[in-house]
Amino acid sequence: MPNPAVSHRPGLMDLDKVCALPMPVGAVGAVVRTARGLPGDLLRVSWVQAADAPVEAGRVVLAWEPSAAGAHGGREGDVAEGRTPTNRPPHMDVTATLQLAAGPVLLARWPSLGGDWSDVVRPTVSEVMGLHSALSLATLMLERWCP
Image (cartoon, rainbow, N blue to C red):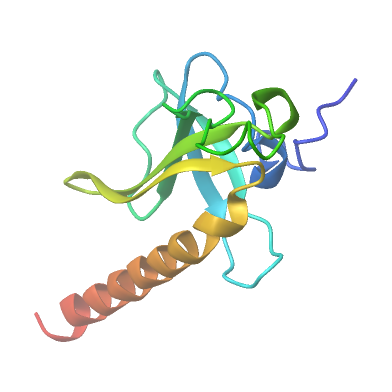
C-alpha cells in the first residue's frame, strides 16, 4: 500500500502529512525541497539520513522530536479543562537550520508545536530560502562583473 505522505516524485513528501509523526529511524532531518510563503501552500521535503552526502548550501533542514513536555505536550490546566494526553495531537520540538558552505547555521527553534505545524514554520523557511537565493545571485553577479 503506498504511503499517502509521498508525492508523485520518489522521496518527496508533503510536510503536513509527516510532521506530527516521529522522524524515521536513521533520519537526521528533512531537507525542504520546495517552499512558497503563501498560506495553505505545501512544504515538500525529503528525509536526510546520517549517511547521506552533505546537504547543498542554501537548503533548510527541519528536525523534530517529541516535546520535552511529553509526547503529547502536557500543559497546566489540561486536566481541569478535560484534555488528556490521549485526546490531543502530539507536540514536537522543531529546529530549522540553514546549510551554508561553512556549515549549518541555526535559524529557529519552535518548542512544543502540536499537530500540523507546517504553517508555523513555512514563513521562516520560505523567507530564508528566498534571501539565500537572492544573495547567491547578487554574489555571482558581483564576482562576474566586478572582479
